[in-house]
Amino acid sequence: MANLKLFLFDLDGTLVTTGGAGLKALTQTFEKVYGVKNVLENFSCSGKTDPAIFRELAIHHMHKNLSPLEMAHLQQTYLRYLSIHVRYSKDYHVLPGVERFLEYLIVRGDILLGLGTGNLERGARIKLSRSNLSPYLPIGGFGSDSEDRSLILKAGHRKAEVRCGRKIMDDSVFIIGDTPLDIEAARKAGFKSVAVGTGEYSYDELKVYDPDYFLTDLTKGPAFLRELENIYPAVEV
Image 1 (cartoon, rainbow, N blue to C red):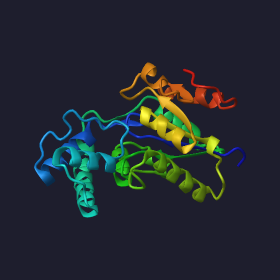
Image 2: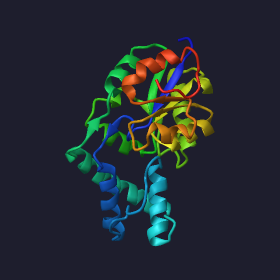
Image 3: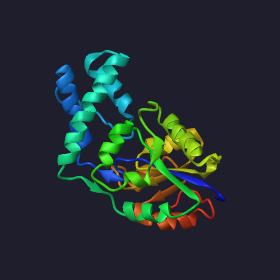
């Protein structure tokens, strides 16, 4: 398998939109466990890991650090609500070009696929449960591996190397995501960043963070693969 590459995909805003299922589950979790209503008012979850979100919300609203037991209880409660909200979300959908791009990639012998997401691993699988995407993405780094996005990506890289039994060079790891935090985490980890304009950030907002590549959406995935023959700086393809 010559020139082995690894593609790690962010989830929300990159692969799917859950129609706010995660935000609804978070709101319901903090109201159930702590009696805090509207916990996400004036708070952005964009690009953050699930454990970091739980900690920040607890500090902001209750001025406390979560113990390991409290964190575990919050996560289990959140996952129960998430499963319900994903199942019944009216606005859940797979984003443009995703399925076709993954189908294109999976048949190649030189690319491994996985997730690189701040979602807890169970949460990620729940969010993908209404799609047919999980089988394409059997490995990954998750919020359950670390609260630090760069360490999440490194965890996904390690798992991929174990799975294939080969070394994958850092400059052959591509992080595909829709937020500035995805770009920054990729850079910190020493990997290549591929910004996708299907989330809440525009091209102009994302290019400030100097991604290696920019795709308007994943219908442009095949064109991006052609670009990989020569590593160009950030360019809209």
